[in-house]
Image (cartoon, one colour):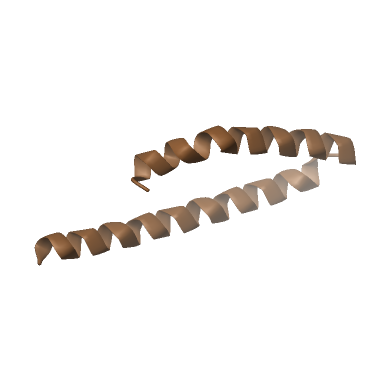
Length: 66
């Protein structure tokens, strides 16, 4: 019973952390979007953020145990 409760709590914590990180990333990138002038620069910065996410998301997912 304790193992089951621990697994359920761990799953809930994972979901909460994942949603919190998603909301944080969305708010940070929305803020960044207002600070970047020009369409080409937004594309470059968006590509750099996408490339960083390509490498960082699997690392964080592995650390959280997904």
